[in-house]
Length: 97
Image 1 (tube, one colour):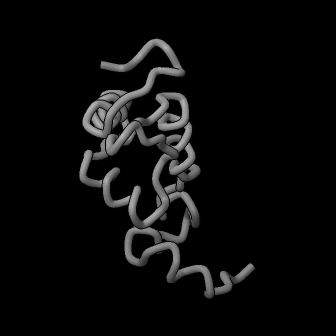
Image 2 (image 1 turned 180 degrees about the horizontal axis):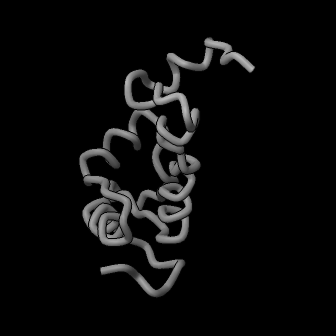
């Protein structure tokens, strides 16, 4: 269930479930790994239990999004190379004017 209160504190399992329901599929195990290695949402400790503030977790997930990437077919309209080669391979080639 997605919390209505942005200041709600959730455990790892609840945070993972809420993020997944919000469209950001993440597991509690991933949050555990990121808590020890870095790169995850900020959390607080209550004894030995990690608690995640919902607004911080959602901001972290949204921050991991990348801008929309166009498909290779729209990069070089008319040449038809997009279907044959990935766009990163075509970037070095200079098309004739």
